Length: 338
Image (cartoon, rainbow, N blue to C red; front, side):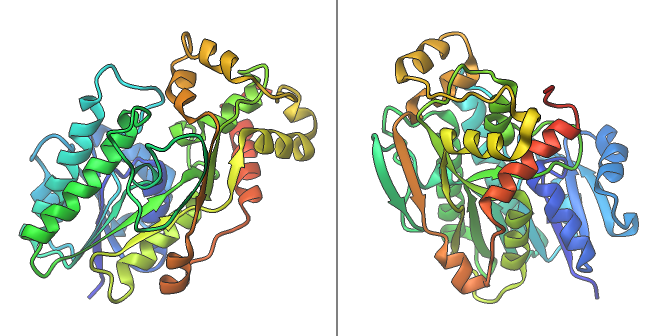
C-alpha cells in the first residue's frame, strides 16, 4: 500500500518542494490550504501527478477540515506557520497561530493514528536572544525569549516548538515527533509568489540600502531543507530528534560581494560599501523590514548541522550556489527589477 502523508501549508515555499519530492518518491500526499480557491493554482505550480495529490481546506486557527485532511495518513510534515515580512503590531499575531496550529496538528494526528510527525521549526527557536559577537549552536540550544532582542517571530517559533514537545511528552503515546530547524532558506521559487525568506537578497539586488548592514544569516537551500524533511519522515529512530539545517554564515557584505562578482550588470544596484549601524537604525524608523532586523547588528551565528549529516546522511549544496540561484530566479521572474 502506498505511504500517505499530510503536508500542511501546501502553498508555502518549503512545503511545495517537500510535496514535489514526496510524490516523485511514490508517496500519496494530502496537503492543506486556507482556501480551496488556491487549489488549481497550487496544482499548476507543483506540476506533479495529480492522482497522488489531495488538497483540503484547513486553517491553523480553526478545527475545520483537519480530521478530513489527516484521514488515513501515516505521517505528517507540519510546515505551516506564519512568516511575515515585518514585525506585526502585536506579537500574539504570530505566537498564537504558530503555537495553536502546531498543537492542533498534533492532536488531529494522534486521533488519526499517525505514526510520525515531522515539524518545521526554525533556527529562530535555537539561536536568538543573544548579544553581539560570535556564537556557536547545536541541537541542545534554545533561544532566550526573555532577551530584549527576541522579536515576535523568534518567540513564535520557540514557543511553538517547546509546546509541541511538551504536548508530545504528555499526550503523544506511541506517535513519534521530531523537528527540523532551518536557517535562512534560499533558492529558486516555484512561482512568482514572493517568499519572505528571500527578502535580504531582494533588498541587495534592488539597492534598497546605500550600503550593507553589519548582519547576516546561516543559509540553507530550500531543496536541501525539503530533502531533510523527507529523510526524517522515513528514517528509523526519530522520536524526539531535532535537526539543525543551516550552513555557512554569510554577512550581508559577503552576499553583496558574491552577487557583484557573479551577476555582472544585473548586480549594478548592489551596494559596494558598508552601512554604519546608526544609519540602519535610522532607516528602521521608516522601513518595517529594516526595523525587524536592527537587533541583529553585530551578531554572528555559527551553526553545527553535523547531527543531520551523521544520522540521516544529509548533504547540502554549496551555499554560494543557493545565493546565486536565488538572485537569478528573482531576476528571471521579474520580482526584482534590475
